Amino acid sequence: MKKITCLCAVTAALLACVQVSAQNISFRGGASRLLYDGRYFPELYGEGVSPIVPSFDLKIGWGGDKDSPYAKACKYPEYGVAFHVLGLGDAVAVNGPGMGNVYSLYGYFDRPLVRAGGFSFGYSAGLGLGFSFSNLYDPVSNPWNIILSTPVSGHFSLGVFADYDISSRYEAGLGFWFNHNSNGAITFPNKGLNAFELALTLGMKNGNESRPERAVKSYDAFRRHFQFDVQATVGIMSNEARFDSALEEDGTWINERYPKYAFQFDCLYKYCRTHATGIGFDMFVTPFCDEIAKYNGRGETYDPVSVGVSIVHEMSYNNFSTVVGLGRYLYDNDGLARNKVLYQMVNVKYHFPALADAYVGLILKAHKFKAAESFQLCIGKRF
Image (cartoon, rainbow, N blue to C red; front, side):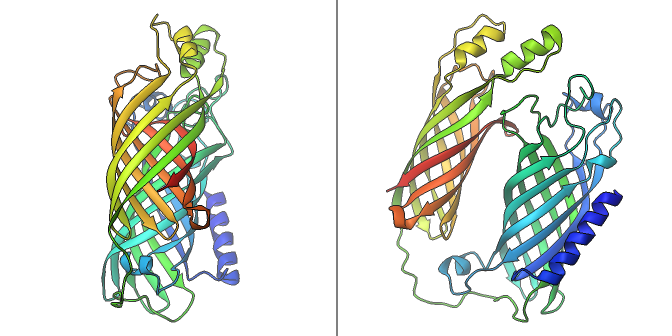
């Protein structure tokens, strides 16, 4: 706890001195409660116990061009980079050393939905990397921590906030966030870390100008239209069946990694500058399905290709866009999981207008709204 406090204090002091040309520097502090999962928490923290630990964030934000049509449409959002600390080192484990602190560096986007006077209410989304430097899973020295097994993981956060401008210089608020860390099945065990966070925020604006209360009416050249996206993705996955087999036989920790592919076509109707909704057609390729059959002991035969159809919604801001999708398999027999009917995807993309609207992105695919299947890189083209 002392290390976390000192680290946050030093970082805050440096940020206050440097100012880094940011329009807003804020600090968030509160408590996070881990989401209880009966599959592994009894061995780690005890039956029915969900630890509550301290958590902190330092955020460096910008508001962008106030005359931008995207800024006006989104009620002048804030975006930037942030550093998150989850104080799991303070949680006492039943067996072994438990878990160490988790540190995350991520980009965020805070969008107000309502502005009235100095008050604002909205949502926040973040995506980045998490880092764990101690007490990782080890089959001998720390077999109970099957939540995180790699020093680097993916970090995702989603929350709601309410802020108030105390003055033209300072603001304070309260928020509620869901934070997730996992390695996306690159290395097992990979149960993933889920936590709910309640925190107070205090922000300092670098400048005397207050945020606009409402968009100024002006001509907007946007026209409603259909858009079509074609993309290919690639990622790396471990063979969980191989891992479980080796662990059961002799306690060894074996992660054999294979490529994972996908090809997707989305048709969306863009009804406003920042939103589009439509349907997607997805094909997923799991080339190592024979290796899954070899080790899972079920005596079944699997097919590498799965297909599905999904409902997709895109949210855009300048050249960035985030696409969320809820899909249903039309055919699926790859052996990755049993009884999976629905799949979920979150795709964060950056478009290059100078390259005929080609884009690159990162995709997180999951099942049952909690079990990450894979992280994948994508490259695509919009028509």
